[in-house]
Figure 1 (cartoon, helix red, strand yellow):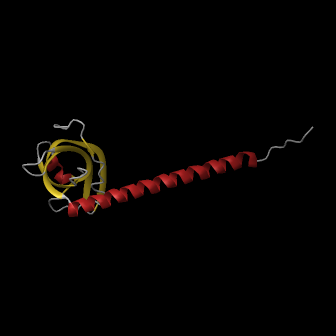
Figure 2 (tube, rainbow, N blue to C red):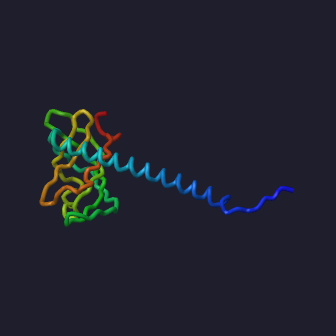
Length: 154
């Protein structure tokens, strides 16, 4: 009869392998998330520098309830639905955008208000121009912009 003695390694080795795999997957996901955020920040900075200036009407504002603190201000992460009009002759388009807005500036972004923005005419990506004394939040305008499916004229 073969001797089948219990060894702690029968339990410990699979457990350690599972932990190592979980750690690697988590690190890869976080690195990808960081790289995507950095790319969005660079894209927003490029649009601010080279984009077409426009005015945007806030159709709706919904506060996500998330807050960020830094640079002596607290920022609300909010979802904005905007109708952007570049010039009198161009056609308006609508976008949904998530942006960090300083809490004192939140009433200035309410539905019906008009905001200064810059946008990329090719992709219709929009970035809010900052007003007031509040600097842009370091994670601001990490836009996940997508054209609205309910936009008129489509």
